[in-house]
Amino acid sequence: PEESQNLNVGGYFKHSINSSQFISIDANWFLRDQTNLIRLEPGRNENDPAQFVNEEEADATGLELMLTVAPLRDWETVVSFTSQEVVKAGQPDQNNTNGVGNPIPNIPSTFFNISSRYTFNSPISERDEMTVFGYYTFVEEFDLIFQTTRNEENIIPTQRQLDLGISYRLADSGFTFSVQMNNVLDQEVFDNFRVPRPGRNANLKIRYVLHE
Image (cartoon, rainbow, N blue to C red; front, side, top):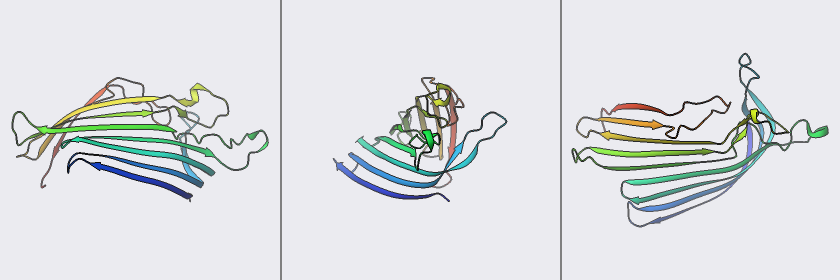
């Protein structure tokens, strides 16, 4: 089984202007000494499926930050940032062919997310609510597999994705209708095995609440 010895040092600060307007910062620094780290190893080709493997030893250090800003009663923006280094630990063999000190693949080192939403009364009916929202994601490039020399084919490139949407809630019926445009800028995005994800696309959601 996977085991880990962790050291975490964190702090939290919040400044409130009133009950609905505030700014807060949550910070956490961590150090992890891990054994039998479970990760998914990609197959060599389409006939070789991915499988879970254990890394005997891994060391991780990193910083996590979360900033929340609510400038208005119904407007909130959250920024989450992570910077980490997860490397293979242990004793290197001759010429370090076992990759000690190299980053563990399929784990990004730097990424952040920004989400923002604003809710207001509908101009059609004051009882109904409309919400506009957006999400932005950034992931720095990271290795697909262990490698001692850089090979572009084994690197998942830097990714940026912007999603935007709007929803309309009918107060008297329990229905909420949402339209969301994903990957608005039509950027190249991938999963952790370098398989391309959809470009610009849209979806419609209808939600019904029986009881509130």
